[in-house]
Structures are given as structure tokens and as C-alpha cells.
Amino acid sequence: MPDEAEMVRRLLVEYISSPSLKHIRDYRALSNLAAAIVSTLNRNNTAWRKWTPTREQLVIRAGPCWVPTDALTQHLNTMPGPTLTRTDVAQRMRDLQEQDRCDFARDDLRESCKELFDREHAEGTELPAIVGALQEHVEREGDRLQAEQRARWKEAEEEKRRSLEQRFVSGADCKWTPVSGSKDVFCRSNGRAYRLTRCANGQCEVSRVADQADPGIFIGRYQTRGDATKALATIAFAPDIS
Image (cartoon, rainbow, N blue to C red):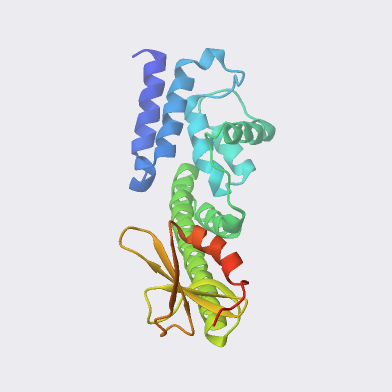
């Protein structure tokens, strides 16, 4: 088998041996694999002479996992290819990250990755297996942190909604806000309360109301809520006619 074909075969075997189905199906991971294959076929044109595609793939996998550079360098030097220094490894990883072929490590996962690495390393786990375990850990923790972030955002939005509703109910000026028990939204400007109702055709009807239960006095119909808001900027300060 030609040298290039053998290298590509090794890349494919290493890729499909990942324990993570999510990683195998990941678009970015596939893009990295494609880039590694292209690099294999063009390896004589690269400025990085010490790097085989298999070495690069391990660095790409290790990049977001806080693998200690010394340990990574030591293992890479057991693989076919010229001897690498710590600087070789650190700068190659930086270059791959700048090319968007390797993810950056998240600061909020640094300590947990270090703990997992130290534990597995102490038990004698081989470095590629540690990297695989770290990848799974980063995926799980990333999903968990993202879910927590979404939950915090939802809670903040709900708190903002409750605060706006309370402002309206208490008689303070406020922007458009939903009010419990009504499908419409309400606002108060210059001490005057208004209700906005969305029509079937998508337009917005605005009425002046005493409170959320008041049928109110029809003010006008507008194409969008933004148009209604602009109109109220003038209407709310017009003299009352009664």
C-alpha cells in the first residue's frame, strides 16, 4: 500500500475508534479529519516537517482537554517521526487552533480535566485513552454548563418579566409587558396605561385602559408593535380631552 494511503487508513481507523458517537458524528471533528487527510496528501509542502498526520490528530484531540504539554510531548515522541520538543508541540497546537482545526480549551473545565488526567495517569492509562476520556468529559461538562447557562438566562428573563409586570400593576411607567391572565401586553407611559392586542392579520390595536381588566378606549391600529410604541411616544403626552 502506498505510504500516503497507509497514513490515510490509519487516520480513518483512529477516527472511527473514538468511544464517543457524538465525536464521530460531529461536523467539526469530521472537518478536522478531512484537513488531516489533505495534510497527509500534501505533507511535503508543509512548513511543519516533524509532524505526521497521526501526530497532528492526537494534538487536535488533546487541544481542548488541558492535557499537560510535557505528557503529550513524551507520548508523541513514542510515535513514528522526528523527536519533538515541548515548544514544537505547544506551537503546533497553537497553529492548529489559529487555523480553526483544533478547539481551544475552556478555562472553566481546567481543574476537572486536570483531576481526571492525574487520576487516569496514576492508574497507568495510556495517553490516547486518557484523551478519549477527557473528550467525553469535556462534551458532558460542556453540555451541562450550557444547560445551566440556558436555565440562568430563562430565570433572568422571567425575573425581568415579573419585574415589568409588577411595575405596571403598581402604577409605574413601564415598557410593554405581559400581565398574568391576559393574552395582550400592556405598558404605561406618562402615567397612562395602554393595552396592545395582536389582530388576526398581524396588526396591533392599541387602547387606553384604566387597568388590565378595562375594555378601554380604542387609540389606533398599527402595522407593528414598534410602530405602536413610536405613536405612544407622542400620544401619551398629548393633552387629555374629556
